[in-house]
Amino acid sequence: MNHSDLRSKAPSLAAGMAAAEHGLDIQLSQTRHRAALVASWHIAPGSTVLELGCGQGDMTAVLAEAVGPEGRVVAVDVAEPSYGAPVTLGESAARLAESPLGPRIDFRFGTDVLDPSVDFPEGAFDYVVLAHCSWYFGSLGQLRDTLARVRQWARRLWFTEWDLTPASGDQLAHLLAVLIQGQIEAAGSHGEGNVRTPFSREALLRLLPEAGWTADGNGPVDTGQLQDGDWEIAACLDLAGTEERLAALPEPVRQLVLSQADVLRAVAKPRGNRALAGYAVTAR
Image 1: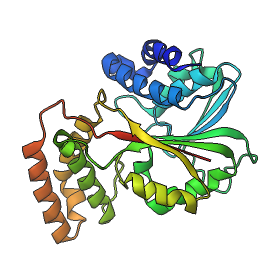
Image 2: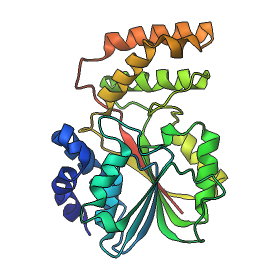
Image 3: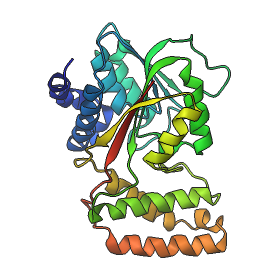
């Protein structure tokens, strides 16, 4: 399936997602982004894919379309089916299961691949995919161990994440929101946000060999139509106003977070903040 074929299916894929009922335009932009990524990876029909951090299935649906009726996507997430709002992971998965893509997808929630009870045969998958989920890991060490664990199961790695290096000044609000959340987590006040361990592209490239992978592709990803900058800014400001989370911080860190939140309020727009760019890395 070529790039244009997959992109042309984005509207129907987006309309089939449960979250589309709460904003079809938003879901369409998220689906188009993932369709462009998968098309650039030249996935072959009939492929087997292990997706880590599948969440509500935004990437899962695109992968299932790409692999075709003879392919298979095992979509794994550590969160329970009840996690997520306004649509839970379980609700979204149920909607996809009822669609024509359903037979190609095996959702496994509440599943940590570092658990010894989770296992697959060597070389069971053509690809393992992590798409905008790696900052959710509790630490870089946990990510490294996870990538090392799946190395024996998959021949190739497809990885995409936000790029911490801003390309323009209007991305600084998103960057600041990400760094504040990372500081709160690093200081020991843990929550369930999407940003727990933000790290640079360079940090990932240093980590891959430790996990047994060799990067063979690395490039920018356009995120201009995505709303994640607005979402993370709102999440950060909500977090900075939560006394319980801030009270768990050492006082110097708490004051630093509060001051940075003041700056974020000053530089962020009410809506329409430009998201950071993304990057994609492939490895074998």
